[in-house]
Amino acid sequence: MYHLIKIIVFIAFKIAFNVRFEGRKNIPDGEAVIYASNHRTNADPPLVACRGKGKFAFMAKEELFKNKLFAWLIRSLGAFPVSRGKGDTGVLDTAIERLEKGRSLIIFPEGTRSKDGKVHRGHSGAAVISAKSQKKIVPVGVVFGEKLKFRTKITVKYGEPIDPNEYIDQPSDPNPRQLVKLKNRYMADIKQLVEGGETKENDDE
Image 1 (cartoon, one colour):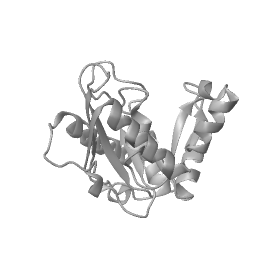
Image 2: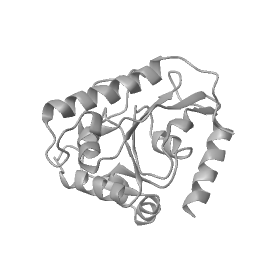
Image 3: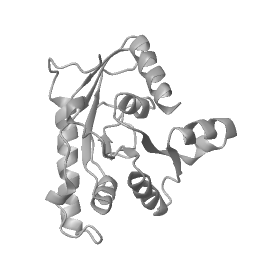
Image 4: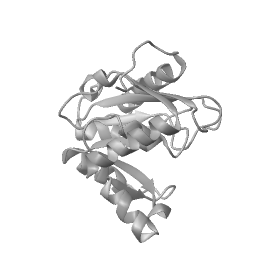
């Protein structure tokens, strides 16, 4: 059912928007990774996931779980609740657990949606999760104009994976400076994907 839902979501996006996907060859095969993406709209998680590889997990604000039916649906798709602004350290443990079980994680390092389309300052959560889980980070850029509407042109770009071992010496107790370097790397890659213009490559077939 999971893969069927991904196909349905992909078709729905192709109908609703002029969407294309680039760089799927950059996504490692047969392993869970962390997709670190810029954040424009609530459509970003399914946009990133529908052409990603394997099954996914993603953080969702706890308010979305109040409706039992909707909560069941998003839980079945890999969502788990997060209490924003409450310092919920258990969320990191849950994310690492999902990765260890083979589900790729979608995370938005900026922490909130960008209103102007630019990539803003990111947080180190993805770096911590990557360091402790030893899972690679795939930077993602979701690119479109000022507003998302019917047949808007959207490009989802998957960048080259980043290996945390290139930055982190001790995964069990990562050095804060090394975490910042890792964070700066994936934020720079995301920014490049968003601002770097289009390519001729199209992976949405």
